[in-house]
Image (cartoon, rainbow, N blue to C red):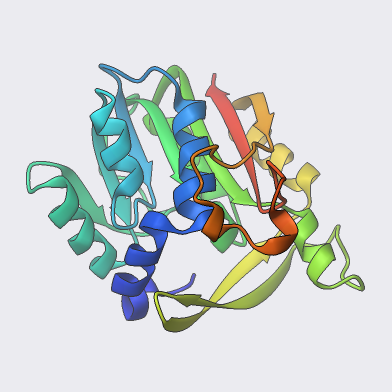
Length: 230
C-alpha cells in the first residue's frame, strides 16, 4: 500500500479543494450517504478526516482509522481529540465489536489492496444487519485508457505519479475488473444496492475544469458502490 506519511500534509491540503476529491469524489460520497443524522459511521481509510468532518456536520457520530500515522494526526487536529481514531491497515482485525456501526464509508482505499477478502469480511463484521458499506474506487476502465494494451481482466498492479500542492508522489494501486469487485462484495456477504458514476459538483469553480471539460457535467475517474450487509 502507498505510504502517505511522506506527503500527508501536501495531499491533505490538495484533497480539500481539488477537482477530483473536493468537488467530485467527496460530494458524491456525501450524496450517497444521504440522511445520516443519529447514525454511527466508521470511516475506513479516513485520511486527514474531511469526509468524517462532513458526515459529522450532518449529525453522524464518526470513528475512523488509517494506515498513515501522519494522516491520523491530521485527522485528530481536524476532528478533535474526542473522536475515536486508530492507526491501522484495512484488513487487520478491527478494534470494534460486532455490529457496531450503521454505515461504513471507504473512500478510495480498496484499490490499494491486492486481496479484498479480509478487508471486506472485517467491514461486514462491524456493520449492523442491513447496514451500508459506501465505497469508491478507481474506475476500472481507466487502466485500459492509460494503457490500451493492458489486460482489463487481470488483477494488475500499476503506479501513477501525481503532484499534490507542489509535492510529487507516486501512488501504487491494484486494478481489478468490475466483475472481480462485485464478486468480492458478494462473497463477503454484501448485496449491491447501487452503482454510481456521478457528475461532479455543480459548485465546482470553472477555473478547476480543464479546457476539454468546459461545458460538461461528468468525467471518468472513480466508481461508487452502495452495499448492504446481510
